[in-house]
Image (cartoon, rainbow, N blue to C red; front, side, top):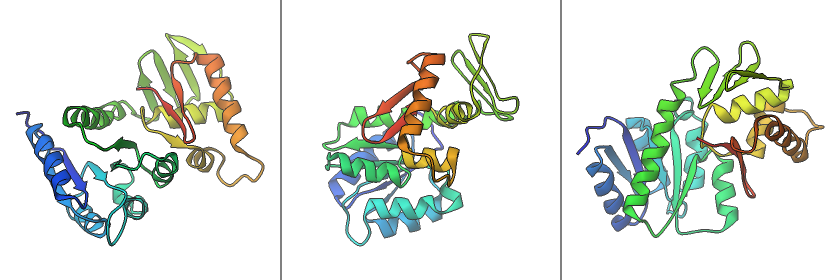
Amino acid sequence: MNVNKQKILIVDDEPDILELIEYNLRKEGYHVITASNGQEAVAEARKHLPDLIILDIMMPKMDGIEACRIMRSMPEFKNTFMVFLTARSEEYSEIAGFNVGADDYIAKPIKPRALVSRINAILRRNVQNDEVVENKVEIGDLVIDRESFLVYQNGNKVVLAKKEFELLYLLASKPGKVYTREVILKNIWEDSVVVTNRTIDVHIRKLREKLGDAYVSTVKGVGYKFEA
């Protein structure tokens, strides 16, 4: 068993699900905390400050969407990974999850090996984020320097407009994380009333024209992500 200091909070109202996930993550070396509803989740999260939280959506007392929304509003959980685990595969529930700050979405029934691989991959983003030093992101053949507003691909300078640069930097700062259009608008264009979803799509298209299609992918009905 690997020795792992990272903490994971699992939240589900089904004891069998909790036991199955807990067993497999402990076997992987993670420190695991459990809760059976959204209210307990918020309390346990504040107590233990986990690195990642797995939330079911449909639970008594407080559902996962509301629990995630509450925790995302707290500064201590700004960078905590949050993953929804649910049997509901409807697109609207995925969108609702991403809108309140979810990082990923895993559907039941659970396949333990696939679940552990997904969790390992998500937590590896912390290692990738360590490369964000002094406003610089280095991923693969890309170097994105926020201080100088310059982008280099394979050592060659790529000229981007200001908003194109800011959009690329936002996506690349957390590879694999899905950003909804609402979150992108808030971060890049703030409260501008003249900006629409079409504006984001146009900027994404320009980024792909200048950098190629391999970096930014579309999550249908949700938003965009930078491929890790």
